[in-house]
Length: 286
Image (cartoon, rainbow, N blue to C red; front, side, top):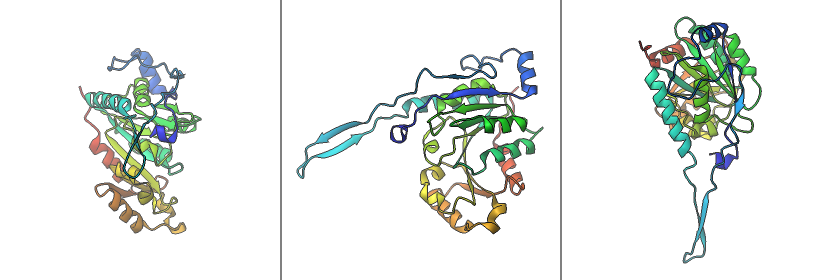
């Protein structure tokens, strides 16, 4: 958790919208009141007044027959995050919006997957994106070029997104009913798994260039997954990767997780991924 890894929440948020969405916003004002605070202006950057400081763990020393022993009682540092996450979840469900938390290590191919997904589902379902990175808007620029409105969240020293960041991003995006919000979390196989954002689905993206031992080495991340995408399978002839070993490790830590092999570059397996998304996307409300 943050008290362990030492990162802080907050972050800077920038909204980047397509020309179509910008025209829609200008033509219809700043959007309807969706239960959050007022929507953010396009291209407006802001940050919290300061990082949220988690309270330190309480340490008590108790006498015991065999000498002193220390018991650490770590407070529920995620209580505030969980409360905001539930509000996000309620907000999304009331409006019929699917939010997917996409997590992976750096370089697994999250942005490439999102680019391909937006093109593959163009005209079938509306997709907006929340981009999480410590610095730069490089990935957000790629997403915008692929035709999707995107909110870039720069976490600074933070190694994950949290529920408050998503709440602010949703205010900026103002996603329509029956759409998908894809959340590209910060590249990290540890902390993102610990923070509930209010999403309805968690997807872990792995690549064959990372090694087949990742589910066993990072069990909490894979234990949280509804779906595991094994990406870059077009590179299997050129790397030392055992798919059966990977699948076996995943079954040990998360027996119910679905494993899908695919390549966002070549398109292999992408139709199955699209079907998985569309089956979970709510019907637009009237």
